[in-house]
Image 1 (cartoon, helix red, strand yellow):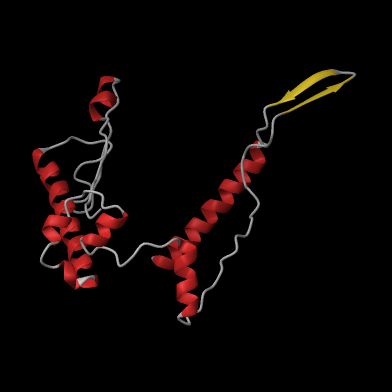
Image 2 (cartoon, rainbow, N blue to C red):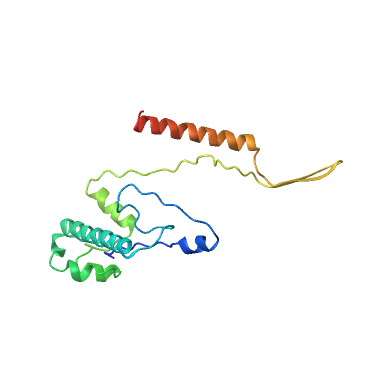
Length: 173
């Protein structure tokens, strides 16, 4: 489909009903005109719709630049409807239908260099360990699996140090 959608929810009134007053600070008049918190205004809704429309226009321009044959029919095709297989081929959105294996084989036959990406398993870092139960002559002990607070704080400290290092590189003071 050639279309654009933007969605959000706004919980401002719910929070206010609980006595919570969210504060929203923006740098730039049109930054986040409608968001999770903050008042919804007609002007804000119009700004968001303009952004969606501009994105859709850019999307259509990209399709036409990539497939000039679409220029005359782009407004009829770019309605957000889904074009499947043969229908997409009939209107000129695709050149053909093939499985990924068929496509890769065709490209290799044409002399293309094809690389296979291999996944690398990384250790999972989590503040949770598997829950355990152990029984000794002193009784039964249940562990909820939460790592020690010092370990969690150490991970947090490392993250904050890396974040500060990044900020210093991007914006040295």
